[in-house]
Length: 140
Image (cartoon, rainbow, N blue to C red; front, side, top):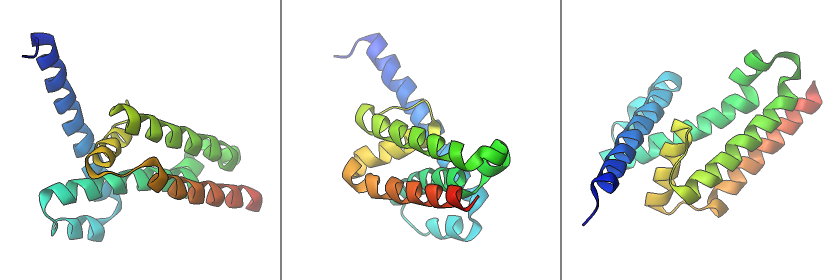
């Protein structure tokens, strides 16, 4: 039988995970009207997983060729590589621990754990983004 503290901890994690899922849902709603609407055709568990994956992909894309450039200024391409690396490492850590302080990463990690998405599946995605980041840095 779980202790009262263990029960509290599980409830807290469930609440945090729900907040992370809501956060990922908001990312898809803010960035992709048509894709966001299309996900509504999916059954809820699948829809949630798709939204969690999309949110992580969107954040990575914003680092490579979106909001990061506006925030980081002239050295954005160099710093973007570092930010992308941090996101990648945080993602792998969360996939192992089942927790991240980054809500989008946390939601993705929950999906990865529940659906069997492994680091081996995720690595090519980040590798391609790193190549894009380096290519854009060379264009500057």
